[in-house]
Image 1 (cartoon, protein in one colour):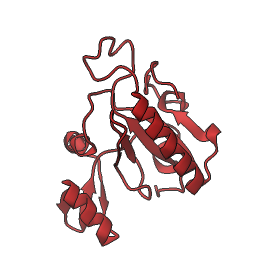
Image 2 (tube, rainbow, N blue to C red; image 1 turned 180 degrees about the vertical axis):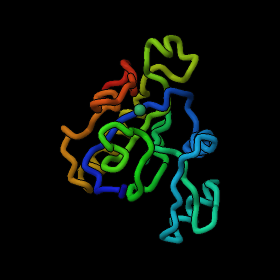
Image 3 (spheres, rainbow, N blue to C red; image 1 turned 90 degrees about the horizontal axis):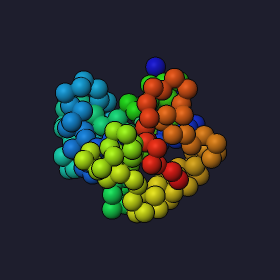
Image 4 (cartoon, rainbow, N blue to C red; image 1 turned 135 degrees about the vertical axis):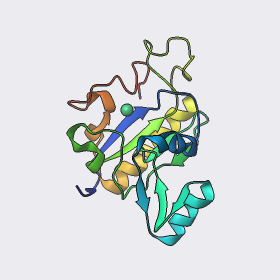
Length: 167
Ligand SMILES: [Zn+2]
């Protein structure tokens, strides 16, 4: 299936500690998914410089999200927008959405005391998320009604991004 023009934005938490996109990429290495980004060459070099693995024909990007928002509000690029994600298989969303994840675990049952990461989004994360959403809504003409929490996608059996997440 081809990557379709993004018409939705799906919101996630990583369900874990505040780590970089590259660390998540390495964590996903054993799980077999990933896409090879072959062009443009300058983009390939950007990924390689960041530490992503160069392979025959380009660079492999395994992290499933398109954007990762760290606790301090910095936004790290995951997959390029123009390739499919690996963040929400329900409703074919990997092919028609942009996936954004905030680091942390905002589920009060799974992470009551913060042992699995910070328990609610930081102010800096929410501020950065709003800015990123406005940007993506504008460039892809995505209405607010199509910004969806992972758990609200029909058929997605998950509590992601947790009950302590709210915009
Ligand atoms: Zn999720």
